[in-house]
Amino acid sequence: MKIAIIGASGYAGGDLIRLLLSHSRAEVTCATSRKLAGRPVETVHPHLKGYTRLNFENPALDAIDVDLAFLAVPHTAAMTYARPLLDRGIKVVDLSADYRLPREMFEQVYGVVHTDYFEAPYGIPELHRDEYRSADFVSNPGCFPTGATLAAAPLAPYAHTIIFDSKTGVSGAGDNPSATTHYPNVGDNVTPYKWTSHRHLAEMRREIARINPDTTCYFTPHLVPVNRGILTTAHILLREPMEQEDVEEMYRRSYDSEYFIRYQTPVLAAVRGSNFCDLKAESAGDRVVAISAIDNLGKGASGQAIQNMNIICGFDERDGLRAPGLLP
Ligand SMILES: NC(=O)c1ccc[n+]([C@@H]2O[C@H](COP(=O)([O-])OP(=O)(O)OC[C@H]3O[C@@H](n4cnc5c(N)ncnc54)[C@H](OP(=O)(O)O)[C@@H]3O)[C@@H](O)[C@H]2O)c1
Image 1 (cartoon, rainbow, N blue to C red):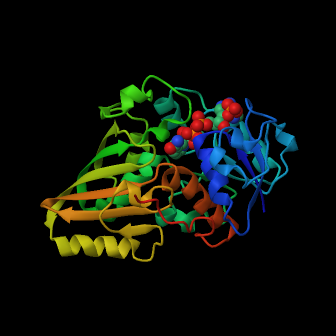
Image 2: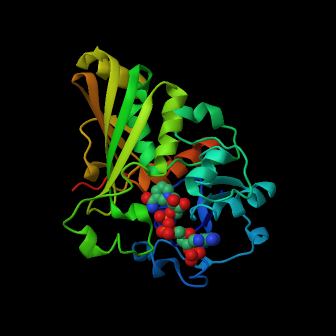
C-alpha cells in the first residue's frame, strides 16, 4: 500500500516514517515538506539515513497518488487536505485536532473557524475500534487525552470527578523552537502551563462523558525535561469506595485482551519509542489513583495513527508497531 505523509519533516511525521519502515504492507512513497522540498529526508531525520531514499516534496494535492495519507500538520492545515484527498479515494488518518471535536466546540476551543467540517470517528482503538473499522477517515486523538482517557476509562462509570495531572516531554510541542522549549528553560526544571484551560481538556471531557455524562473532569499539564513521554496521574473520585481487587478486576476486564495496554507500574522509559500504554491503579477507598505512561509520539500520535491505519485497512493492528520501548 502506498502511503503519503503530509508534514513529514516534523516530529510526528518523522516517527511515522521510522515506524512504517517495519510495516509489512505499507510503504511511504510521498513525504511532504514545503520548506525542505527537494532535500533528502535525512536532512532533518538523520536517524533515517540509509533506511530511505525519499526526498521531501511539495506536490499539488491532485498529484498525490497513494492509497492512504497521514496528516501530520498543524490544526487548521489538516482541514485543507482532508476532503480533497478523500474525494480522490485516498483514506486519511489525521493527527491534528481538526476533526476531534464537534464543530462548535472545535471553533470555541481553538478560536478559529472550521472551513471544511465533517463528523469523524475518534480513534482510540481500545474504546472505539468497532465503530470505525470500515471508515475512510479517522481523527487520531490528542496525546494527553489518549493517556488520560485510557487511565480513567475502566472506572469512569463509577466516578463523579476525575482530576488529570500530566507531565509531558518537550517533543509534544513540535519541532518549532520557542522560549518555552529553549533548553535553559526546560532543562533541570518543571513548568506547569495552562493550569485550567488546556485545549485537550475538551477532548478528555467529551470522551469521559461518552462513558459517564455525570463525571466532571479537570486537567493540569506540566512540562518536564525529557524528549518523549507523558505520565498522567488520574485521581478518580468514586461515588462509593472500591477495594483494590475490584479495581484491578475492572482494569483486567477492560484491557486484558489489549496488546498495547500493559497493566504494570508506568515509567516513561519503558514505553519510549513504542505504541504501548502502561498503566496501573491503586485504591484509597473512594479515591483511586490510576497512572498511565505513553510516548506522546507513539501511542500519543504516530503509533496510534498506524494502529488506526491497520484497523481501517484490515491489517494486523500490531503491524509496524512491534518494537518494544527503549529502557533505559
Ligand atoms: N508532537 C506530538 O507529540 C504530537 C502528539 C499528538 C498530535 N500531534 C499533532 O500532530 C501534528 C504534527 O505535530 P508535530 O509535533 O509533528 O509538528 P511539527 O514538528 O511542527 O511539524 C509540522 C509539519 O507540518 C508541516 N506543515 C506546517 N504547516 C503546514 C501547512 N500549512 N501545510 C502543509 N504542511 C505544513 C511542516 O513542514 P513544512 O512547514 O516544511 O511544510 C512539518 O513537516 C499537529 O497537528 C500536532 O498537534 C503532535
